[in-house]
Length: 141
Image 1 (cartoon, rainbow, N blue to C red):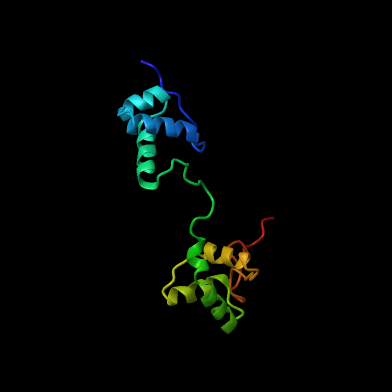
Image 2 (image 1 turned 120 degrees about the vertical axis):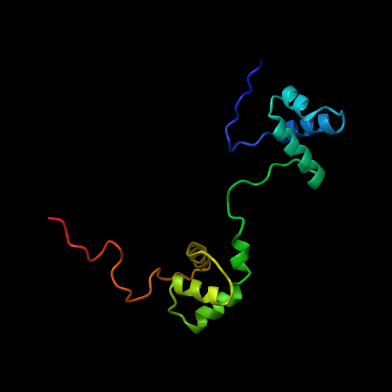
């Protein structure tokens, strides 16, 4: 039995290969397994490409990595600016808590990145919150 080559994750197959494999199934009536063998890819990949063609009309690979959800917090830009105008000294966590009180749930890191993008840096801890987790401990001698 011929061994299947393993393709490393992260590198997409070319659009030409995807097109030929999908066409073999859709136009020539080839089975997914036969198309996978002919083009030396797993049949599940061929199935994914056929489904993508049927649903989207193209075979371009999906985007990988990067930010796909910042639109959620960006949609609340005016509200965040309003909160910061009312209370300019809000820390990141306090701002996040105010957003939660208004029914908007975001991770602290999401709020921090939003503030960075808009040049609105804030402290992570409220002023006067005391020593951090590694401060205030006795020094080793």
